Length: 216
Image (cartoon, rainbow, N blue to C red; front, side):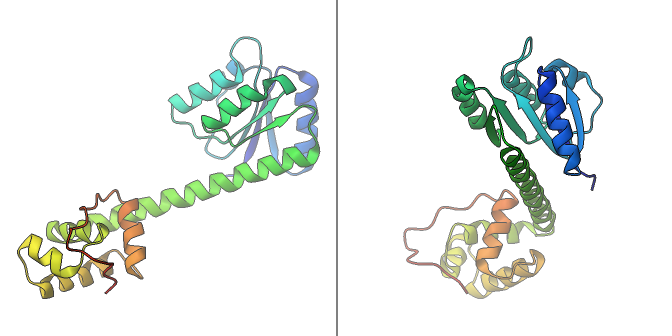
């Protein structure tokens, strides 16, 4: 995995220089840009890193750049740099997915804390993506009947109710459940449910006669 790069987009040259000096001293690779359009036009790899982005800039503003990145599904974590009066705009940016916003003049600790949080969130998102991918691969190994049973299990239905609804015996349901647990590599029913939801399984609604969880 590539080392993270900090991308700084700010029309203030002094801010760009200050951030580059600070972050380079901390061991980060740093790329700076004087405008949002310059950043968009640059041939950069956005798979790893954090974007430090000024809210107000001539031409394309920070919120506009955020919107364009999201529209093309670039999920680079964004930390907004704002002046005091830009805080309401920064709040809107966070509602749109930004990790944080930092008010000018900022401190070294504030910048590094926000970058660290952004990198942690990116790592967490990647872990969740891998979990979902693995779950989908395992789900594809199930037979059509096993998928039916799994949908009922995720809906919280008991084996006897699943058997009645599918017109099969309780023992057959239990055999299907055992095979499902093995194929999905689930360590428990709760783990199986997490895997199923990550794979996009739509649960069957609980039957009115179900009174409690079936954890067998």
